[in-house]
Image 1 (cartoon, helix red, strand yellow):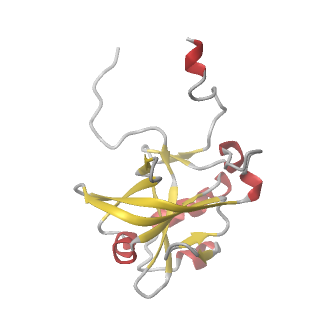
Image 2 (image 1 turned 90 degrees about the vertical axis):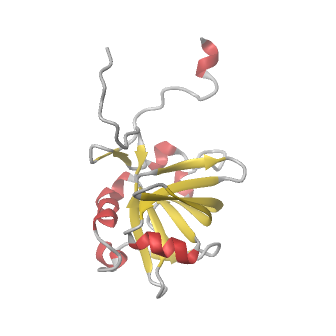
Length: 187
């Protein structure tokens, strides 16, 4: 039997992405965001939501570009730190020892050490209340060769991305359960 649970932001899994942007002085900044996902196939678009109070919100509104950096489990502490500290107060790249690299496609930095980066130009923003949802058209993707499968696509088991739980915990991925658009046919 199901019982009612308080209505709150709850979905499993949530990503633990690190969103890269430049501030008004051209300084690289990054923040962790869990409210996001793919929102369109053609053109390929990704959504990410954040509070107006964040430094990244202002950066994205001004520069109309951002990157979504997908960390591997190896960088879970740095991922958490990017969500704790504010770019207004500290250089997060200097503090973590990670490397900000300027994208050649959009005016936003990406994190060299993270295995996958998605480069986005801002196409829409929607004020939803406490958060604003940014829709970025995916104009480029970079991936470490070591995380690609035999067809040249990023492989989730090689990336080993960080997953966020709304109960304020990070997880890794589990085993594959079956092929999409395939296992259901067997019913």
